[in-house]
Length: 260
Image: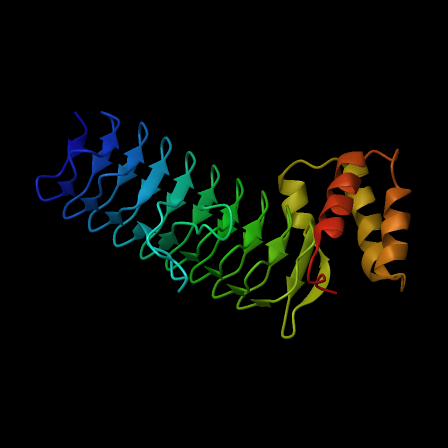
């Protein structure tokens, strides 16, 4: 049987692996599924149609899977899906999705989510991301793999933050942040590449050289976005084809412009 503190209230219909730990005064609803090795601390509420994978850790006082804050929400059985090996610190709030979008809020694997982080409805958080204290992701935001978001940052609805990007402290993100870039300031602007992050992730010198060229074409050569797209495409064959394609795909999908 799962190791459940006697003061916790776990609905009999909830599905918990026998290795799950549940702390004191925690409440788990009937539509919740929790995978092996996950530890839920004290005073946590997990409700809604929420599925949680393996080896996650939820610290005290978080609200996971509650009804979203969209005024159009009418109680539809939308979902929250959380992957494996995520750390969720104190006072975080993750809401379920809406039928106006995918109907699902999704968190990937191996994310480090610090205190007071809010994930609104239909957010998609990738893998290996770091969200510092007080980060707020509004509805429909997408954060790609390996992104880092500084504390007290607010991300406007429907924005996208690209893979390996880094957003500085207390930022206001109102345009898409391209992959590999480091953005900061008020108003938000691209300051350079997230070179420290790329090196920590064992990017080869050839791949980093291509990313540097992408940055130069996008931000330093005075090109229009259309001209930059063409020039970036011509970088194929220099050892960073995956990064070239990643940037081209990102820019092609940008709906509200990119941080410049």
